[in-house]
Amino acid sequence: MSKAASAQELLKRLIPPAQEAFARLQACKRKVIWGDNQITLRVRQYPKSKDERVSLVMPQWHKVHLYSEVLDRKVPLTMTNSTLRMIEDMGGLDSYLLKTPESKLKSDTASALKWEVLTTLRRKRYLEWVAKNGSPK
Image 1 (cartoon, rainbow, N blue to C red):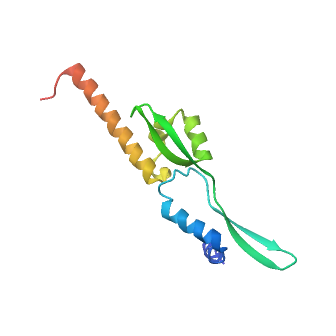
Image 2: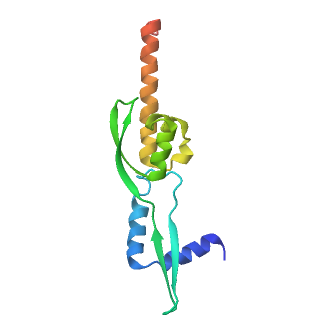
Image 3: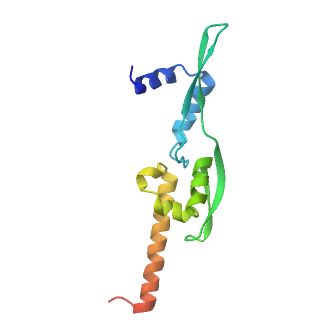
C-alpha cells in the first residue's frame, strides 16, 4: 500500500473528536502561516483490548501581532512556533516575507501581506526617485 493510500485509510479511522478537528483544520489551513510544521496521525494500540485508535496531532497555533517596518503598523497573524522562530532568525516580518519564495509561504494571509509590503516598497522608492529627479514626463 502506498503512503498516500495508508494516510487516507488512517483518516477514515480517526476518532470523532479528531475528525471534527481535521475538518476545522481543512477549513482554515490557508489562513494560518505554517512554516515547516506537519499534521501527524498517531496510531495507538491498546494491548488489553486489542483496540487501535487513530488520533490527530496538530502543531500549536499562536495569535501574534508583529510589527512591519515597511507598513509602519502591527499586523495580526496566526502562526506556528517554528514560523515565529524563522521570522526572528531572518530579522523581522518584512525580511521574512521578502526572502521567502511565494511557493513556500503556503498561506493566503502571508501572500497578501507580502504583496502589500512589495507595493509599499515600490511606492516609497518611486516617491524618492521623483523627489530626486523631478516628475516624469
